[in-house]
Length: 453
Image (tube, rainbow, N blue to C red; front, side, top):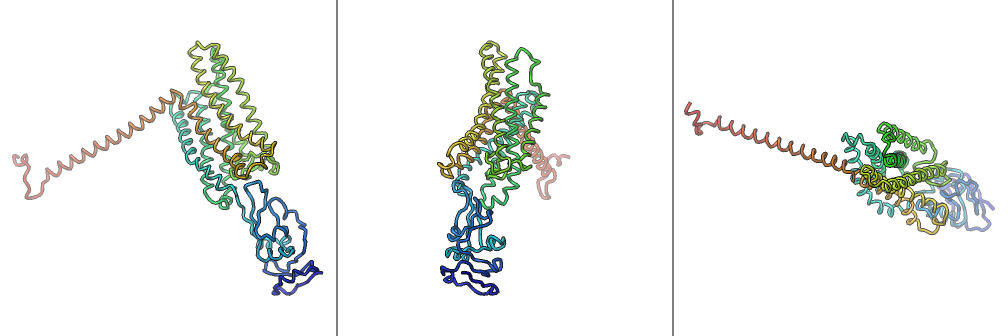
């Protein structure tokens, strides 16, 4: 049995009427302008799949709750649906307003969708530490860049030139982190308003910095390998000219890879950390890009292992050579830096592998998973950028002397400036006093010298 109310837009449908068991359909129901002439159908099955998926669900069983969550319940990011009083009342009696499915205007007026992030506050509380780590990291890396490029001896040194290049990539990663945690201070709904432009900018910065950091680590390893293993063959070296060319190539590669998500090969805004490396298949090419970059990074780092093994064997065999000892010490320090880069790079990859091959997604709470898969890698990347300059540049004697000289020059200039200012001030005061003495006011005591004249 059905009821047709067409042509009666002012008629208010009495809810007790909907309790009639024989009534299956009511046509021409109007309760507001966007939902005019709506059809209420009992036990209705949604025809449009777009209204029943992991992000949207307006089935009658859900609408009768009035307010409910839609999404993958194991995730932090969900959508909160709030149905209007009329729609909720109809749904509780088993009727579905068909105009919700056929009219976007009716859907938007009756269904309020609010994105929520259940782990937002918990993640941000941990990320507050970045307001300490990131600025310190930026200062340290900027110091390495400034001292190296303004000191001729360091600037001509291939190892320090490459180290300053790594410092630049670490500075970019630290800057990315600082901008990210600053943007996350606002509520989640406000963050979503800027996520597209923000992620395209800082995500590009992060990915470029990561590519350059990995490539520079390999170039540094090769440079030390040649210096130690072929110490008796000065012609077999990474010269400054070659280093400049490799650095330029590294940045070109980093920018080229970072452009891929902007060209719709993966995306930057698929998560709130603006990182395009996510091994999931629901985003175009994201899985392939993630696996490809991860395998590429692992392969490059694995290549360095036999290099340092060979360096160790050569140093052990020729430990009596003073020059070789010096090169081996530098190689050991660079090896420590490369090892830390490798470990911090592999940790997120291991987490992703466990995520894909185990039931980690089901057994852990959303907040724990968010901390493990997003917050912790962010902290590790930032911490790695902090310790890199401390592992090599700040331990190098030449760099320490150059840094001390820069500080002394700055302090000396300030001292000279202060001394000069004090001297000028004293001279001006003396001149003023002399002027007052020479031109004394009427009735005053005359100057003895003038009296003699």
